[in-house]
Structures are given as structure tokens and as C-alpha cells.
Length: 205
Image (cartoon, rainbow, N blue to C red):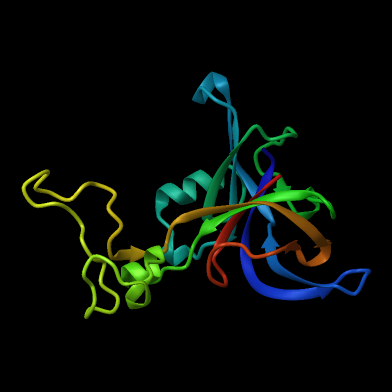
């Protein structure tokens, strides 16, 4: 699938031709450099490795410098492989936002916002004291019973309990491309995409 690496700029809203207010997300999509071409003969599969966002020399290691030197580009912060790319590209080619067209649908993948250690009400949508069950008459947001005693004498795997929430790989599918700003490499898609502002996202056709 053809795609690009981008950065989430933030959310805004635009009006369509009928005057309806549409929430949308602005993404800086590219420019991405082809940093490696995977082939069946060498790697056992076909894919394009794209790099996005320059890295400073101070934070680069020699192995990275040698890898990106083959493509004739600076060391990149974010590197992603795309399988089944629609078009053939060579090492060092630069891909821009004009890969996408207005009106088509894309999938956007990113890492959701981290929310830290959360309880069962926020993490799993438990009812709390308003829908009190399992004896939680005096514990407002407690999880209630989590298992029997004599059998199985343990808590089953997958039990919904408190824990760390967020920072998951999330893919939002079928987002319509509302606008492509080629001179600034900006892509405006309908709806929201995962991640905080300035986080990396992967856009696929």
C-alpha cells in the first residue's frame, strides 16, 4: 500500500459547499526520502523504506550515517517500511503529499495519547457507585469482585482492572482527504487521528 510518514499538526474545522462545519485534522505529510529498496532477491520480500524528519549530527550514530549516505540524504528520525507500493521508486527519490488526491480515503496510524495509571471507571467504563454492584456500596470507583476463592484460586488473565492507559498503536480507517496543500506538504483529513500534536503518523492509501 502506498503511503507517507507525517506529523500531526493539530485539529481545525472547515466549511463545505453546503455550509456544514466539518472537523478535520491537519497533517504534514512528507517530504519522505526512499532510504532503502527491499527486493525478493536480497531481502526475501518487496518493500520501500521511507525516512522522514532530519536528525542532527549530534544525535546520530555512525551506522545511521552510513545507511542514509547510500541514499544521499541526511539521517532521519522516523523510518517506516511500506509493502506493496503501487509505483516503483529508486534509492534517494523524494515523495511528497501530491501522492494523495482530494476526495480519496486513507488510513492513518499513530500512537494514542498516554494517560498514565487509570482506574476501571476511566479505563474500562465501569459504572461506579451510581450502578453499584458486587458490594461496592461504600467504595465509589472500586472494581468490585475479581475472582472466586477456592476455585480457581487466582484471577483470570484479561480481567479488566486498573492499569496504564493509552500509548497504543491505533489505526483510524477510511478518513476522507478534504484538501491537499502541495506547496506546504499539508494534508487535511476529515475527523481525528490518534496521537498528540507533533507526533508521527503513518498515512496509507
